Length: 188
Image (cartoon, rainbow, N blue to C red; front, side, top):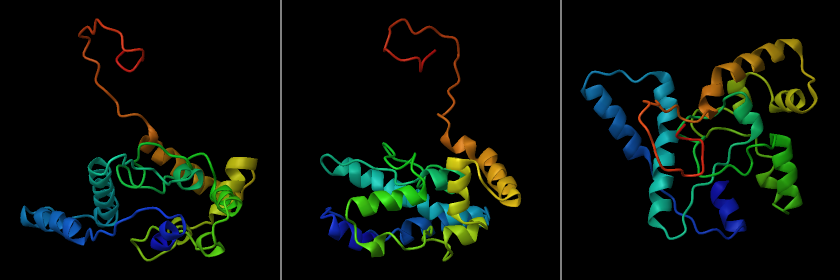
């Protein structure tokens, strides 16, 4: 699907096989006696993919990594920190899955790109299979406050557990002076 979409949008693109990078790290972990957890095996390809995207963006003139996550995924933490949650900016970050599809229709994208069930491309399952509830439930809850009580509890728990993924990296402020101003409060 992604190759077809970049063709429709006439975007220059490359196809990279990240299997070697992923297996290389897992092999090195095993070599030093670290057994990779299931989450490591699921999340590592996303992180390798993002490192690859940054390498390409830094090597191509005008290259930039755009985050394609949306509000529905992010609300329940269905993203990998430093993986698909990374990027220079997130144009879809405040749109639900339904709103992203509506934007695609408004832009005239072919329907085959809009109706495909969302999946991480890593586990062989749809996002909704992995989550245990449909994005429609998240969307209704976020936009209208309406949700089945059993699903609400699960959505709230996932939301609370994943907020760390979207916080600015904490910086230890050591109290040493910075005597020049840079126009931000970052260093205070």
